[in-house]
Image (tube, rainbow, N blue to C red; front, side, top):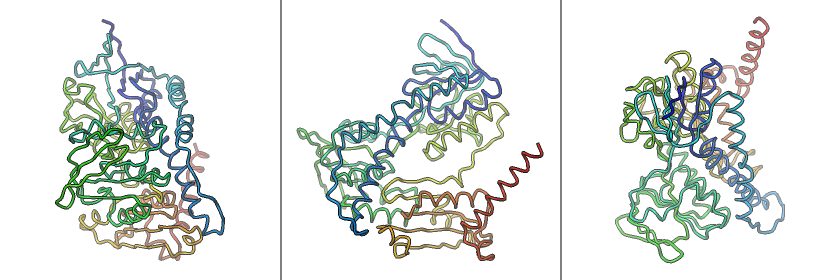
Length: 461
């Protein structure tokens, strides 16, 4: 049996893996990456990038629906779903080849297949044994398993992005980010949508009032939402599916052409046989320290969706991979910091979030000031005939530091980055008020200051 040795061996080929290759290769370490599916991982091939092609189409339909407010006469639009899916596939088809070229240029050896640990510092890949000083678990995530009778009848987001026939009606079991985003696409395309959520509210990790604003818009589109439900079973009824669930103490049933698992995703860490590597796993979660290193095997690092403790976002996966790579080269001293990283749910309108929710801020014991604005009557919102424009900013009152920001609509997915910049560089809201400045003005001045310092450092190097 052939045995090969590397200094760094990465399991997975997505954003986290890509990030983890940078520092080791710059340091001249030998790096190999093992991937069984498409290089690039879920996000560009089966997740956020193809999803945004569908979201863009839904945005166009939303703009058309508001044409009358601008005194523009248009006919009833009709989406060609088959052509839309074909467009989506065409836009992402070259992603794996581009990733392969990037890795080749970087000097990373790509190995194909599914690997499993054969000891604390080796894995088996087919008939090969691979040894390494450092391992990176970057195996991504998988759909959350739902223990429902007939669960095999459900499809996943992968299927939604591949099926070329638009369904007449869809039920999402679970009201997570995936369910909400695809529900808005389907509804605007003319599909009847129902969401069944087991928890008392949708998107439980996000600010409750912000989610309530999104729910109002979701229901305005005609999407039926039922929370605090228990789905009992899913049964085939010829070409349709029957979903039986309990809600408010009584059993109900609905039928649909398609049922989608919308309960979110969990770390995909079952395959590599981590127990054999002496990697501690609890309830599907790899236990890591502050530097993203296994608490039981210091040769093993974890990054991306394979982690359980950070948001499942591709930029974060790449960020964590970069930290792991630096820790491999420089020693375990770099720690991720997430508080100033924004996130977005791409419903239409979108929900953008940063930092603490109001509930979290109050539970922290801080003395806070909360500024809420229903901006629907603002001239800027009325100009574009927006149907939702809402914001909440949470500030630590003694210091003026921004603790959280939440937007629904009103280009919140772009505006949120101004607040992320303020949080990252600790620009207090109070300073802006004392000097009669709006926060964007202060941010612009701060950016200029940082840029000037950066240029000065280059000149003096």
